[in-house]
Amino acid sequence: MDVVIVGAGQAGAALAAKLRALNHGGAVTLIGEEDSPPYQRPPLSKAYLMGTMAEDRLWLRAPGFWAENAITLRLGQRVDAIDRAARQVVIGEERIPYDALVLTTGASPRRLPDAIGGGLEGVFCVRSLADVDRMRPAFRAGARLLVVGGGYIGLEAAAVASKLGLGVVLIEAAPRILGRVAAAETADHIRALHRAHGVEIIEGTGLERLLGETRVTGARLADGREIAADFVVVGVGVQPGDGLAVAAGLALDNGIATDAFGRTSDPAIWAAGDCASFPWRGGRIRLESVGNAIDQAEAVAANLCGANRPYAAKPWFWSDQYDLKLQIAGLNCGYDRVVTRGGAAPSFWYYRGAELLAVDSMGDARAYMVGKRLIEAGKSPDPDLVATAPDLKALL
Ligand code: FAD
Image (tube, rainbow, N blue to C red; front, side):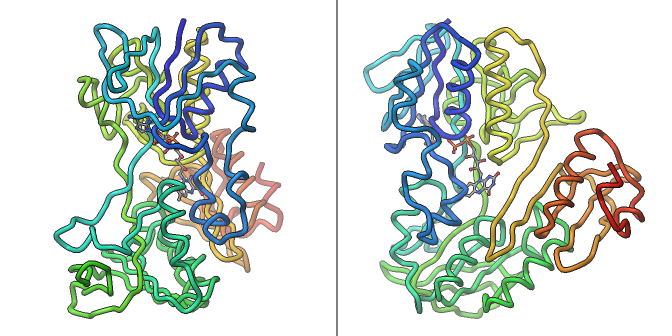
């Protein structure tokens, strides 16, 4: 069985490697539109942006890995279409046949419309290595950065900029930062951290437009305030990379819809990573994280090799800001209560009724580890114990 994988990012690379680890004997072709070999994105808004991590440390595998494992890596090539009837993918004039096709096309950042200045010079988004290489020279001490969007990527960029001595203003249209992903307790902790480092955070105020003729010079906010800026980083979320699937008529539902095994509505086509939504607790979910990209891709690889095993997601995530390592286990969707375990490195525990859903740890590695193990085991400790137990490990 010949497998073609479209998208040579975190999920695509994990999938190709896992197929070989499982002794898949057919051809494996991994096609990516970026010129770089498969790389990890998290450092792009952290150590790589800061300048403390070299480019070659981003590569997911040593350069020789692909050829050594008989994986045909085709970089700098964009797949234009899928011909489902012929079981081929199309790149320009070329057609590449497949027995099984996997879409690991990731996601692309939402951009600000040109009508409000999104196309001005000096306006950057943060998704690819090329994006970051373009914007990194602007991170000079003394420069003024405006970050649009108070999600993890915007906050990480703000932290790096502040550490490098830039003046940073971050604006968030929603009532508070991290509104989509975390509780107010976590947002309060992160906001205080940024303010202590001199970052100005403005919440509940939208952007009216970016200002400037050809190059951005600042922004006018919805309340009429004007902010001067030398450049702008936009972190306002992503759209799943479902363009090929849309054109091919595959079922969609917040991304490419798969069943529990990773298969799309076409049995010969599978999907994994940021582009794919899958069944979760009676509904569907699409996750944007390294852990999910790897685990889901490896589950698809196993199923391509005949495992016939549903994907059991074990969500986890992290973010580095200043010296804080924020770690998250579980998914907080549907929480009705947040329990605080206080201290210098607090953690916030999300419950729905008596059920523990997720933990956000502000630098307490033990809280993260214990929370993750509890959630994965389906155990829900008494919230009062979580808040007060001298040793969390006793909860296990
Ligand atoms: P990607 O890694 O995006 O790979 C998809 C690839 O497919 C891309 O290279 C794209 O160019 C290619 N592609 C798309 N369409 C085509 C086509 N038609 N033909 C050929 N190639 C195509 N997650 C965490 O868990 N922790 C973090 O701290 C964290 N930090 C992050 C920081 C940044 C700046 C970013 C951008 C992401 C971060 N993430 C983090 C998220 C994580 O990187 C993603 O969830 C992960 O990369 C998803 O893997 P993927 O393979 O699905 O998509």
